Length: 372
Image 1: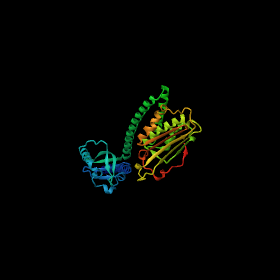
Image 2 (image 1 turned 180 degrees about the vertical axis):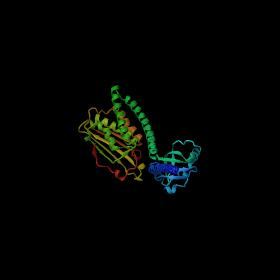
Image 3 (image 1 turned 45 degrees about the vertical axis):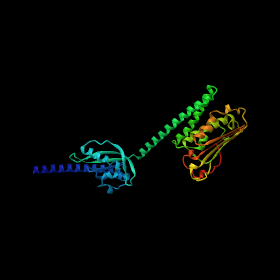
Image 4 (image 1 turned 60 degrees about the vertical axis):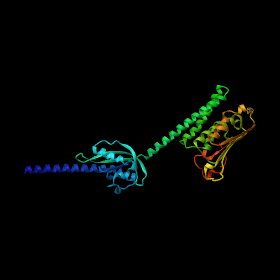
């Protein structure tokens, strides 16, 4: 009797232990299933024939297939044709027990749209340690890839612009040196011109080299000269291309410098009017390529005693910028008029070389003028 009772107790204990182990295993399986189901990453399992065995909710969101549509199908339905050899190599490594390192690749959604993913693949083993399939974790890295693409594009643009500015600075140094009477004057002029380039550069950096407002560009370059109440701006809202920002910025700096020394910004009674317009075009008013941009800087003031009329004085670097550098860089032309107490610069150029994109009808007319 005692032996029987002892055997019963041992059996009951073994059954309890087995039940506890089963409960723990069930809890672990449920916890694992919950983790897989709530994961932000797509988690997919497949057998050694690349047939999908499980498919979590993140996989549904990422690839567009429901679990019912995906399970039982080949994983090849997610792989672009030119990358299908990847799966052959993956399964070969899984079968041989080799490690598959995480890698970045392309997959495609149900609607055919390609998607950049980072894949992590691990073998699935049975209770005897035999490999029966693989689990695959896919993370959508499309946003990161697009960010990398934009950064590379921006760096190429910055590199191009920096080289261009080096060339401009070298030209500034050469031309300013020719026209400076002593080292102090050269240092003052070249410093001011490089700072003007820097102001244009700052506007472009703020917009990630996408362009800058013409209104903002004028304000930025004329701010150092003061007397804002004597400056009137009038024209449509325009976003300038980076090349136009740099060259028009140089022109506004030279115009402001000349005005502060000899013209309207050098006296309280002077007045500067800056206007810009866009002609309507003759054949197709909606086409930017056939339209022209016109900008006029016109100032009136009491004739300045230092405003000499000899050609030596007037053929400085500023004149070169206004008559040759700015108009030629924009594929246009310029007219410069001077007389005692009066100065006018008019630039005409194709609109396509000035603005970032076609403008709407609201920009066709002049907006009300305003002081800087």
